[in-house]
Length: 219
Image (tube, rainbow, N blue to C red; front, side, top):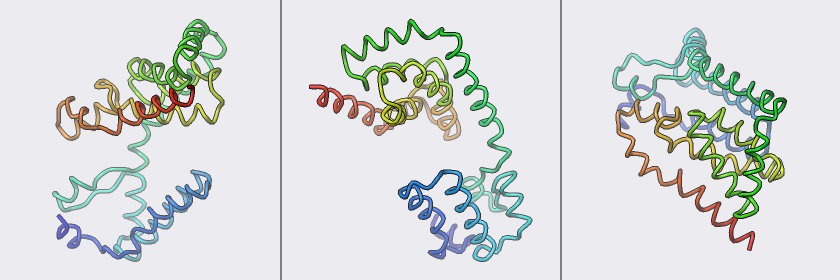
């Protein structure tokens, strides 16, 4: 495998700079759009001067995604591009529209009262966790599940604390729901059964650990 990459790419240490830059700028709390833009521009420059790619090819990769003539390598590396994100963008856009609908119609009022009661009997994080599991099961994608959970739990936690709780529940748990896009698509691509989710230890240890911490903090 190493030989395959060495044969087709220039593995100069410079090529790791865009990835390191994203980590550094994230730690420095630079805005995501600016961080991604800088990383993309730098990656294009490296591809141009270190990987001997033409400007035309780089533009094609940005729009349609990366491909390689080597079949074995292409299986590992193909993908990306603006076109591949159009469907995802559409899903996010439609999901986001639900936020206004939920807020204006008040259809979630009764459910929010139940969640507030769960929060009092367990913990705030526990209520978010239960909501996240149900939202992921119903929504089948992280976008709508995130919006549902935020709408249902925005009165039991401060905004920043809720954002972290959602990251440690909805975003993670979606990968454990067999009919959710976050689990179904990767498993289908890898041609493995749903039982593979049992080995995704991080996905269920993280929410459980945070729940236990919330219980300890409440006491």
